[in-house]
Length: 302
Length: 265
Image: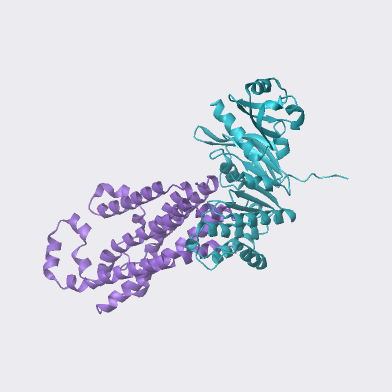
């Protein structure tokens, strides 16, 4: 029996994009599996949006390739039928009502289930009879959510999708994403709201200066820095810290220190003269720590 | 639906189209309303006849102020209406190409499952229809103007003149459309489109009195507009075909460039 391997939902191979002499994206290699929620993180100008534009064939790679479900997106509207897209600063035809815009989207996408639209309109609490130019930024974003989620697609590409949404709507957005994935959809999401990404995503990638810095699950990415420790104490404690193995990214001041521990904190802390420790805080490393770590190392290098 | 963008464009531009239609019609009515004053004024005719041949080429000869057909050809369809239709063509083409891209709406549209070729074709077709409506203002205005001064002209001849006016507008629109869809750069599209229109207009105006411009005249769209013989002679369909062919050529280049380039941020 011949088994054919299902292609990944998204595959970027040696993907690069140059503007003039500068690389906006450089040699990015990455795969997103079907049914996965994949977070794409990086500071402003890191190359997230340029990468997304190449996935949607809004920009063409200088070199390398994009494959979505095994197909190239260049001049491939049939493939785009399988991809929903939403960006935080999406621009619409403002003189149309939201209802008419959705009808245009439906016409071009081969139809949208009216029941789904009606259910989502209630969930997101948006007035689709108003002209888009009369809607607030948050409500415009809800129209974008409607258009992206109501279409029958296999993958959603979301670029900062919750900008403009209040916390309540952000929760509803998360609900929609989970629902979409339960039905077999894949989500590729770029966001700077790290808490949101941490809760939503199965895997993450960091992009820095157009190059992929790291990819993996949060657990994989935080291996070696699983716990963050902040303590204050005597000079002896500070001296002792320098000698203990298993500590990374140690930052010492006269009477305080910050560092990461690769594994369970007990054995490391047992090596310290605890009587001379005035205060200690231990917390699992979260995504914002990881993000800051990448960022800080960049500033330090500079 | 395959025609969704075509229909949306027509709907979006319906008031602007009606406005330009009314403008073209009003211009024709007003220009024709002055015909009795010119045709009955012998002193004006004497002044015209005394002018050098080159100046008569610019202003029109005595005959063009005496007979209604000649007057309409030389004073309505020769300068005024083409100018209006060309301006309308540039404004409309800029508005649905580079302006939409600058606003970001075209990028949003292009993220949907529709090919770039289909987007370009539907937009171009919508502009062709819009210009047909605007150009038909020339028929309405001319017939109304002639009626108001108690004269008459052949309806068929006016329709043929308006058809040629439409083809001129379509050719100019297609040039601007090619720049807009092909580059996505608004300042370039507006500047190059306007310069091309001014070049066409200046060369066409001066070619009648400056013999050295005859070669340059052939390189303008205006040359193939077959004026000022529109109402009084049969249309030159070969020239009409050239205008149509040039328009299709600009469209083909527009599609080719649009399919290859990045959408602007």
